[in-house]
Image 1 (cartoon, rainbow, N blue to C red):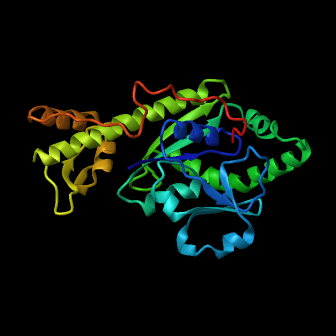
Image 2 (image 1 turned 45 degrees about the vertical axis):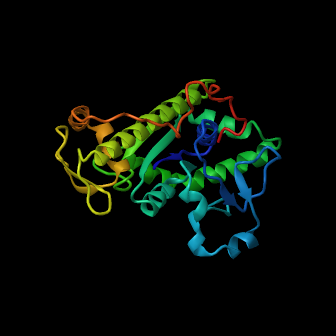
Length: 288
């Protein structure tokens, strides 16, 4: 499974982007939190008390973090089925490690102007001063974690996890179509990735490529653009991810595919069909 983990500082639009992907048909993770509900429109979390959170067994919690003295976490059974999740920096590694056979793509949302992020975080609040105090505390609390995370993203020789090596960075200028276009790009990538996985499985069935006893594909590839090689066995998802980032290997696999008599039967559960209604991406008032 291809999983999008959306990461961004407060007020950058990550929740709005996740909602757009959810409206396209992707399964979005809803996390639990002990913070108070801001308004009736605040529906992006499961709101529980501190006592209820304490009663949840530790083994059933994932993506645990604390912001302004409030706990946030996800129920493990919900994470297992999600395709889209809004997480803090540590949550990327948590999901990647929990599902090592899945492809995890980091979606990093950054503001074009940090002042715009603050403006959008405050404009929905009636008590501006109280909201500003909360915003300031949240920014201070997340700054250290994000500085370390952003340093890794900016270093081509480092990565969060073996199965989380691709980053999609979107700069939010808070225009009406900015996040809509970002969502469209991610939906198109998910479509291509799933179709490529299907092609790889057709090739396995036709014995055009070999697998081990567990169904993992045997590979021995060295891309021309850097010295790292891909050898041994690998799940379909991770091989598809590798191929989409390495043109020469993709060309070799597609050439092999075309030499075999196989019927291409592609499905598209990750994205809407052409005859479905257009993606509803109206701006979300909770653009955080």
